[in-house]
Amino acid sequence: MTPKEFERAGIQLFGPKDWKAGMSRVLSRHPSMIWRYATGESPIPDWVPIVLESFRVGWSMPRRRTK
Image (cartoon, rainbow, N blue to C red):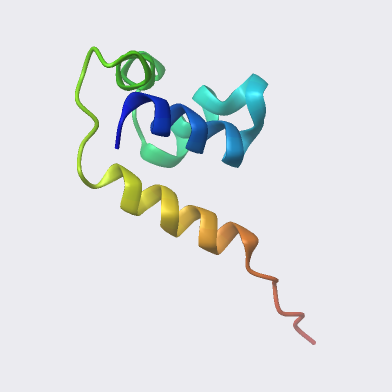
C-alpha cells in the first residue's frame, strides 16, 4: 500500500476531516504514526490493507435485528 492509497482509504472510511483519527483508532497506532504512514516517512506494514479491508467490509454489512 502506498501512502496515497493509505490516505485514500482513510478518506473513504472516515471522511476528509477525521480520517487520520479514524485510522489511528482502527489500526491502534498513535496519530503521529498515521502521519508518518501518510507522508511516506515510515513504511506501511503489510497487515494494514488487510485490517482496513476487513473494517470496510464489516462496516458496510447490514446489521441483523434481534428480537
